[in-house]
Every structure is written in C-alpha cells, then in structure tokens.
Image 1 (tube, rainbow, N blue to C red):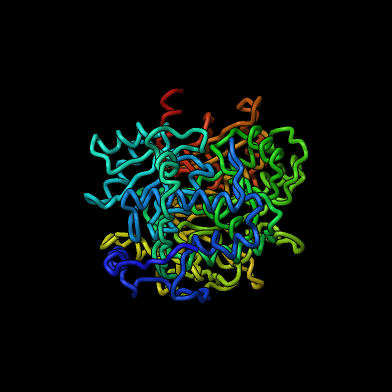
Image 2: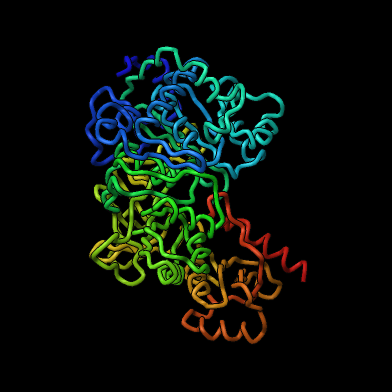
Length: 552
C-alpha cells in the first residue's frame, strides 16, 4: 500500500472560504460515520476492494476493457504523473472530455491525490467554457485535462491565455507525445506517488448545474457525500457485482458520475464508458456488452421506443433529468420489455433522492415515487409550513448530502435554495398520506395566464400522449387582443403532418383541461431547445416560437 500524506492546513482553509457560512447550510441527516482519515479512491480501489474484485471487469471502453486491478494500476500511474505536474491536495483540476475509461481513471487518480475535480461536459463550447473560466482567478485552475478533439474550443475560450493544459486521450491506444498518458508511461519506473490521507469532509467535487434556468452554478460536495450516495440508491436498484451499468449522461453530470462510475465501482460491478451514441447504436452496444442497468432521460427513452429493439440483458432502466410522461414509459416498456423507473434528483443534492419502486410494489397512478431512505421530503407552503396531504407546494428535502454553492457570496442563491435548513429543489409537488410524491413541474416554470396559475407540464404531458406528437412544450406569447396567449410547440412523430383537422382532433382530446389551459397557437418545430443534458430550456421557448411565426 502506498504511503500516506495529509492535506496542508492552507488548502483546507481555502476550500472552506469558498463555501457559504455554516449557518446557511442545510441540515445534514444520517451522514455516514467515517474514520478521521479517509480517501474515496482508496475505498473504491484500495487493497480491500482489489482483494474482492481485482480480477473482475470494472470499466468497458470502445477499445479497451479494464479489470479493477488494471484500473487501479492505471490510476496509480496517472497519479504519479499528476504529482509531477504539481497536482496535490487542494489542487483544482478541470476535465473536458467525453466519457471513457481514461476519463474515469483520471478522476479517480485526482481524488487519490486529494484534488478538487470539476468535470466539463463535452457538449460545452467556447462561450460556456469562457463563462466558467471567468469564475477563477489567475492561477486558481491548477490544470486542465482536455480531449484532443475539444482542445480548440478550450483554447478559444481562454483567448490565448490558457492555464496549464494537457491532452487526455480517450484510451491508451490513442495516446500521443506529451499527453497525460504518455507522461504516465514515461514514469512507469518511478516510485508511486504517496496516497493522500484526506478527511471525510474534504471537498473533492465541484459540480456544475445544468443552467436550464439561466446562469449555471457550482455545487461543492465532499467525500462523505459521495460515499453516502454509493449506498442508498444502488441498494434501491438492487445493484450487485454481476451488473453492467450503461447510460447516456456525461460524467460531468452527477447523474452520470454516480450511475456510470461511483455506483458500479462501489459494488464490484462494471460500467460502459464511451462517447455519446445515437439510440440504435447505443442499444446495440448495450446488448453486445451485456448491460443490465441503463441510466438516461425521457428524451432518449422516447427515441429508443421508436426503434425495433432486439432483446437485451437489461433488467431495469432509470429515467431522470426531467418529468417522465406515462406515454413515454409505456412506449419504451412495450418496445424493450424492460421496466422503466422514474427518479428525481438535483446537482445540489448530488444525486437522486426520490424514486419509483424498482420491483414489487406498484406506485399509485401519476406518482413519481417516494423518498429514498435516509432522505426525507416535505411539501412546504410559502411560509415554510408543511402542506396537508394532496395540497401542492414546494418540494423540500434533507439527507446526507445538500446544497453548498461555491463562491456565490452575496448573490442570494444559497438563501434561495436553502431555507429553514431544508433544500428547496425548485419543484412543485404534492404528497399523499402514504408519502407518495406527485410532481407538478418546476416552481419557476409556473405561468400566470388570465389570472390563473398554469403548470406547463400538465398540458405538455397530455400533448405528448397524443399519437402524432413526439415532443411538446408550451409557453406564453404576447398577443394584441388578450395581452398574452398560450402557444404549443410540437415536434411531430415521423410521417405525421399538422393540419386544421388534426388540430381540431387534438383539441377535442384535450377537453379534459380547463379552457384557459388550451393552447391558442399551434406551432410545429424540428426540435425543442435543450441543454447538453437534454433538459428543456424553457426560457428559450418564446424566442423559438417567435422564429416560427416570423417564418410563416
């Protein structure tokens, strides 16, 4: 086992100074008891883990397959090379690359040395990267590890003045002179860098929110929280060592980081890590590699449901990121014969905290799921009091993880998310007497029309249940006579054509809605505006609708 060394006090002090004051933190419940010295990497890939799982497959890439022992050896080589680049406890390292075993190994190697990791999704481009880089002062980014194909975007974002940057190849076969893997190979005969001892409360992850409501934020999470999420949701999924995890989210999203790296490694399972694939190619790869679990989003499951899916080994699919329409669930299950579980999480909470049943008990019609122990949820009114069963309000959650925004200072964002020690996820919901949560949409998505509060999701779910409609969204548009009207933006199924007769037919099927919820403009679009994780960007809908109107 490698020698241990501890964090310098200065690094720990800087990390705490970047967080909100403790009085603004949420209440942390049922946090796992860990020893004073703790390193997440050692727990996942140390001697005890290798004694149990060393020969088993850990990560499966496009061109390589790593056992737990081979992954640990690669991480040790990468860690030694990183230390040679000045990386150590408290170093802040950005990674900008598509999913691959090399990316996973680099993340683990950085945690081995006590560094803070900030993963950037490969869909980000120079504009988003420039805004992210602007959050750091000179010298505050210790290193950027960048996929060679994405390097031009990063350099353009830095306007010719990048911080220290190294190429990170997707696999060992793609390594080139001067990249991180070549440096690691050159140091193969050097003594391994000492393992950083660490502490449970060391900040190890800066996770970027999706930015679907505007400016993305960074959430700070410590080793204790990452350890905690490796228990409760995998237990709910009955994840075991024979599972093979697959999915579409980037490791830059905590949904992907958990489902495609942390969860499988914590339980001796395997994970598929590779660049994003179109639905048919993804399904074929999942079949070829024997995937048993799939983590993705409603949009991708809708796309899969339109295919002729040959049988696969999948035993369970998990949907998160946005509301799962019942029509999408049913279509995917009919096409794949795989149960689809709905889940709700947040970057601020690190991962999922509400989920539907994985087996056995059926959820009531329309229910999202229930809180995953040890998390507890409540539905609160505007005064912070618990709503009666069945009464909609703001969804609140407490558990072993929680929101601590990084360097938000006096922006007020921490106080918006954390109130009275509860994390307010920004979701509107009601809860029945048995604890089942019924999702109403995002609180900030509510529209006010003709003096009524209107939840867009209610209308959109009905629209997406129509056989001619693949995707739907609604928004308000200005209108001379009424001031504003509700407009529907529709992505039609392949082969469907919008017509006056079809509009009348859809209107007839939507008569279950109150009159003010009926769209007055119907617009067909090729695609809805979404971010890199597939989330609908509602703030861009009015502009998208106006573009269609101007083209008429």
